[in-house]
Image 1 (cartoon, helix red, strand yellow):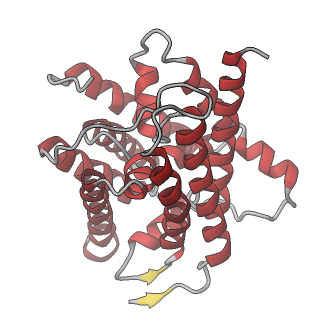
Image 2 (cartoon, rainbow over the protein chains, first blue to last red):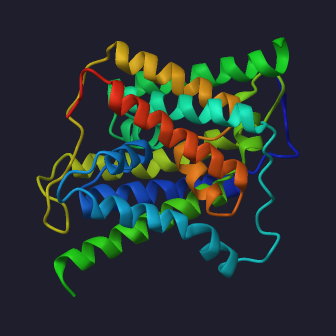
Length: 145
Length: 144
């Protein structure tokens, strides 16, 4: 293993992570909700009475993030996203992520951040499995195929 | 301001804060995510700090949430009750992790990157929603 020092961003990543933690903390303590993106989206696709508005408000807030950040920071604050996958791979990835997160009841936010924060064994297992599958998939694509 | 308005504004603010966290942390850059998942290549450890920073804050919040019965706004505290470690959890995790490793997007960063105007992220989100709908219409054991 070698460390990619050129792309390593310890302070931005730690700071961004702390913001994710604060958002999750505010959501459970003030709103009484788990901040899990796949669960919030999944509930929008099968709406129940009185269970729609909070999900929409949250997603609209997320959608407003890029424009807000660009108003608050200089143009070169973030480097442009590097998206190597072609459209075919992107579609397969999206289908797997959508189906898998609903079957497994959570993703990086719900299991990875909230679940581990509340010391849930179920979320620890889920996070271990999706991380391992992510490591294995990248190894397969970058080093075996 | 009505009670509902306070709720909607706070939910919007939390979504905004979460989106900013994803952007600043580097989670919205698939190259960075794949750099973290590539243990055998040039490894970018940044995302370990994202998780560490988030959990360090979350740990105290959820510790205090577990002792409460209502939220600060007075509503129900929706803490998860499921405890089973079953086939659904394992297979769901495997499929999600494989998809995450293929393109470097998980659900939140996909949505935020779509909002930057990136067409590939929009296609990812459309496919992800399609995957969620396939699950919803084929699942024989609805959880709720």
